[in-house]
Image (tube, rainbow, N blue to C red; front, side):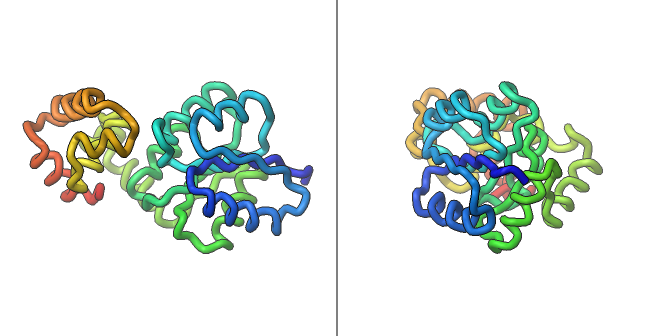
Length: 211
């Protein structure tokens, strides 16, 4: 295999360094790039070619899901492996639907991460047993089988944060967005899901194991 060029996009420096060390041991000739935000990632993606992009979902300001869609819009063949603190049931299906080649949780064992990286680098997809089960459920229910499937990625993210007990202002601070913007997402969610308030949203999210 030609020396891979691997870009790691994650806002936690310790995680980036640890992941880089793990991969450098497996791929001694690899060339690495690092970015801690969507804006820095954009510059590196535009200026250089990458064999693989390792992408976190929870980036400051802009969601990693937005970054993923931009990457695939620019180059549909770009290999992207998402590494996230969220369980497969939370974002796995959405990530694959947006064009990622795989999804791995940050709690995974190093061997699983290396397996996923190797599969994606060789042009394959990586789907864990847990995510395979979620995909099966998704197919059985149908793409529009449950109300939250109608939500955009950002609306879905806000739904989960509301259900976790955060206020609109707290969510705005976390996502580096305005309170007005978060309120707009909330209003759209209520309309799409035919609900009236946060209590209904929270009950729904817990009933469907979204938090």
